[in-house]
Length: 275
Length: 131
Image 1 (tube, rainbow over the protein chains, first blue to last red):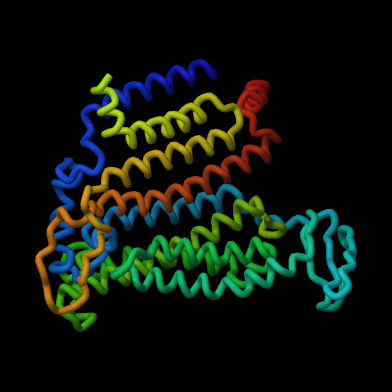
Image 2: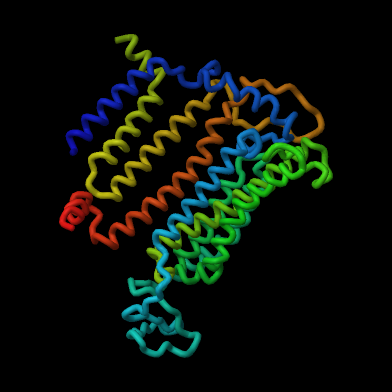
């Protein structure tokens, strides 16, 4: 198998390298990719959508269908992880570990044993869990700023690099950082699984719903010009605002999916003891 | 020889991506461990992403955000001054989708491990044949 694989890889590579002879040189402004549709996007973006960042305008307006189904793909990936891994049958673990917060004494509670009564005990994973005070404190300090920056990235996507995908991933990462620095239970307590799944669907719904609203208002699907009377602006600004609404939907969907996939994969669907 | 060097200098970026892509392809075909196959798939995806981003480059072009775009005054925008935004848009979504597909691949890996207690392809296949 190794030899066959090597032969296939080398042959394909050689063919592809042979094909590069016909490729345009690096950075050639007259290359086919730069001469067909992209000049229109570059030259008309301000005129037609009032969005200076053409990546955003192409993403959510000119190629809105593409992005809508990319968001759907991400949503389906989240659902697939959930369906593959989630175990609902609650199985009592063999033993649970509780640590007394003040003294650091760990007690083992066997199956069916009584749980410690006071709040001084915190549940810890059966794997070795150190007292990671520095990591916990640093993450507690950093997470609000990560989230604030993520919101800025989503909101400022029209004028600077950013948008729903990047900001959504950052928002998701902030919750994943919480789950990694504390444990999965803490993160799930902050953002319940049901809420997360609902947010995931809400994001896709906002995107598709905006498109359907344009349809109801008498224009094509995802033609944000139709939103002008609703938003009380001229049609060009309506396109800009429409892009923003859609980016919010993408951000919510991406954030929720990243958290959903992480919590399912890291705990193999048990949602009990994670990474 | 001179032609070869000229071709290498003009096209070396594509050659790097092809090498990366073939490393990924080889890992997907030849590696026995499923996690290594997934890593190979990700290397392959990264090569494609780099390839697309390099298509968008224009010599003398700046990043695809219109300068002084915010404001009432309008000025003529020339396509030559900005790099091609289209590959960036496509890869922006592809990166996030690749993370999502990685999650699904790992989830499948976990399921396979729970059932067969191994991630080695040949051991899984022999277990399937025994049944």
